[in-house]
Length: 169
Image 1: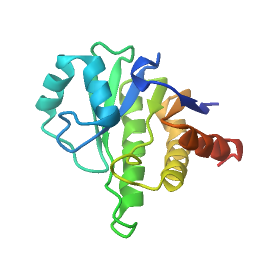
Image 2 (image 1 turned 90 degrees about the horizontal axis):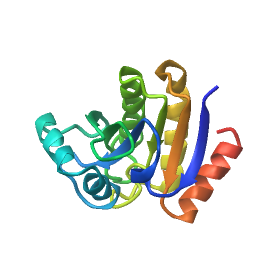
Image 3 (image 1 turned 90 degrees about the vertical axis):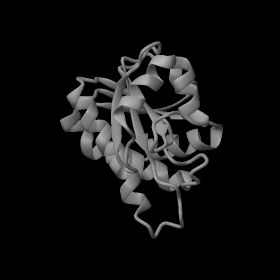
Image 4 (image 1 turned 60 degrees about the horizontal axis):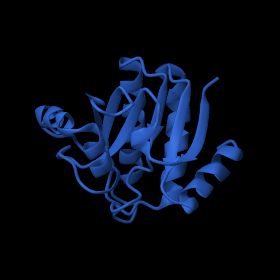
């Protein structure tokens, strides 16, 4: 049975097969976790991302991890929160679903997700956590993943994930 857990820390330092980048549609770097991953992986990541020619919102693309401990980076483009009536929930679920598909395709056994779209994209954190956990649970059996880490920036986000996971959500 797969293990899901909430952790605090630096996603760029985790010893997992794949980390997920909360990317923008260009895939060419940005602020927050996106910038941190690009800096830690080195310039080869930017070159690999250029070759992908972007990514649609709700989808994800894979690149090698280069200088990261993780072998893979899955670049997921989450939605900007616009009040919840523009398909944001389904687009966010699409990010997690696609990352779990990429995990299967790349033989990933352990994966770490940031709280996609909850930073500058303003997705409500608890709503996003529910979508993340539900979508991962729905797709974990077919993915081959044995461990999922939800990497939380800040104690409030970690509390949300801890409570939802403890409740069996």
